[in-house]
Length: 482
Image (cartoon, rainbow, N blue to C red; front, side, top):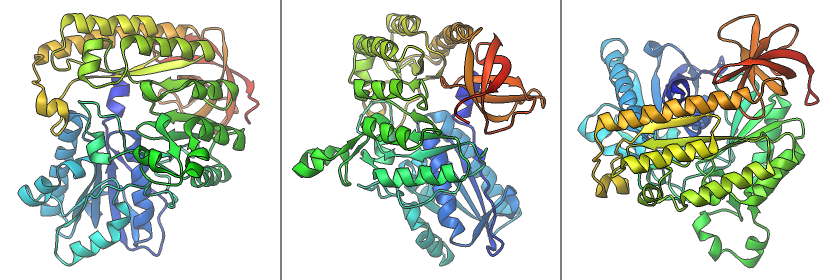
């Protein structure tokens, strides 16, 4: 479990194929959720057209950008350490270097970064990346540059992202932005704005481009994909003001998902992230109907206690969540369900904590992302609730959650022993050059001997062994997806 947790906060230096005519150098790092990594691909595309090639060498960069996350204090502290590093390089090695902050921390800490601490030259919010050329011009004129205005439209539907640090097999495709679910612990509605969706044809065009260049798997991406609703543009909350024609012809998530599945029958399809109160039965039937839609649903719950769920403003109860789980497993029998869980939310008691453990026992998730609560300034919990659970209690409860998840993960992988699963090969195994690694439909890592197979192949693998997080097997031939 710790590996999964770390991957959500680790930075990644992103590099793309350089253009020989470009003379300036860009160094970009991303932290946090998949949405940030997807956004960095958009940023790279915009700046490629402004004369920038990317570099992995920090010291030679003309422009350094860090795409930031505010969802937990740990992520913000990591970014701050990187900013210290950038400024040391700027001071001691490359005084012409410019430093910019992108993403959620940019929105939340704009004045602090630019005016109080003076540690960056540019602050750009998640909806303002198209303004980067103008902001860079302001920097060249000796002025601080800032744009953190949030949009009412899907901002980047017309930009073809540059696939950064890609394996050439899997890619993200953004379909929604923002979130209307005002969970009391979460900064996303404040840093990324209200929900709005992307025009379906632009999504299909992007997937077609990926298919034409050899990609085999896409992940439809958004803060809350189940809320996807295209009715001609605008915020989801304004749908009731749309015309009767717009409402009658609106495209919902289950329709988009089916459109993609039918349009690209040899492309494997994933989506993330779902919200329990927004996942409807129609989506489940679409998942069950099409073999190229992966049988994995990431369904964050955050707590198993009704009292804490209410304090979190999660808009569903423990019982409603469990009923949804039952429905999912009934409609999609071979489904894998994963979770997000927070330990030590304000006022959480031992009884609340045990409710969380008992919910986990009921579901037996395949894996999850688990954290102790950290207060986020600007959220309702940060403003109105005392962070009153001692850190040692948070740590102990988190460890109990992690330990139980490890048991359940082992239980779920053992279910695959003796089965043959379809694997999309993504890379060579980290542990052996003689093995390949990929994921099955349930998003569980599978490792098997390389033989004559290669990255990008769909391979049927018979599972002979497992750990709590990995399936181990032997290839028995190519799958029908090839």
